[in-house]
Image (cartoon, rainbow, N blue to C red; front, side):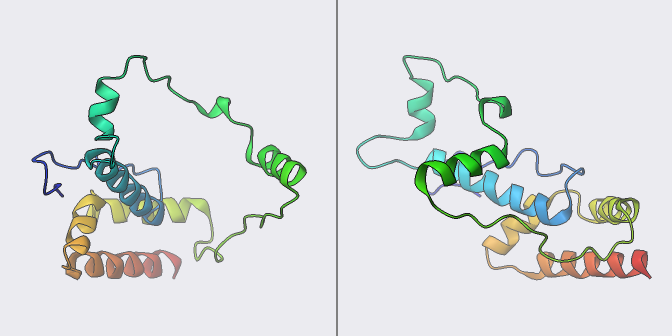
Length: 148
């Protein structure tokens, strides 16, 4: 994908992380694309984030997980300070796999058929849904074969 006002290509560099399941990998790719696109477009009155970042007078300080409280502590702090309510996370659905080993096997086999989800995402964004549809059917087939 490219920005029409720039010849720079939007990279999703590490969408092939095979440790994540297919759904998480897809979402991860989408987020990387959106972040990269955001960083290439001009913000009215401010400039282009990537250019601004390269000319920053002070260095960007990296942030790590330890800079933030754990989710349960952050939720308790939110409830305490704002009196709001939060929905506790829950599983979307039961896993069809009897164990984590079978889920990992499915993920590994799917990764062999679809090594980089970026191509699926690029195709779908450009209204070519066939590769994404074929990948989804392959994932369903693999899941059925492993779970049967």
